[in-house]
Amino acid sequence: MRISDLAARAGVNIQTLRFYERKGILRQPPRTTSGYRSYSESDLSSVLFVRRCQLVGFTLKEICQLAKLHSQDCGPQARKSAEARRGIQAIARERLRIIDEQIESLRGMRFQLLGLLKETNGEPDPVCPFRKAE
Image (cartoon, rainbow, N blue to C red; front, side, top):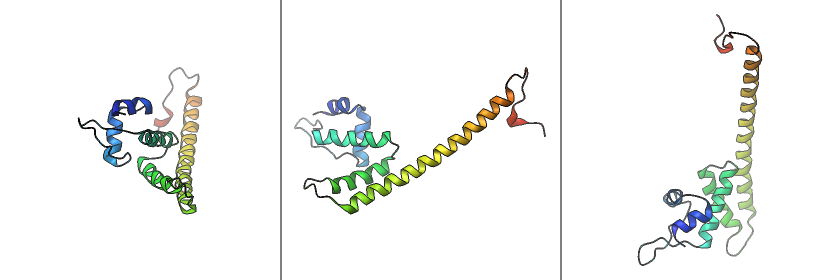
């Protein structure tokens, strides 16, 4: 399939696919005699894997690591590698830790904003609580 077909089926734009190729996330595809990139169903699976990983917050660096570990764990011989699974779990645990920290930070911001709204509620000319008189 051509790049436009892959982009449409994966739900990304062509520039994204080219970026993935430059970064080594997606393999450099063979080209037709006329110079067009020629992608396979395997390439579509790779792009969909990247998209699923991005949806849960993994960075592109982490996605590259996960893809390598995933190929070890689910390669052509389908040999299960305990080491690969442990690597995948370690990356997932670290991402979860970062997400939990972000959630706590957002809760703090939410608390501050609720306080701001409470302090300014009903006042005809409220003073910004972040600039209280000294």
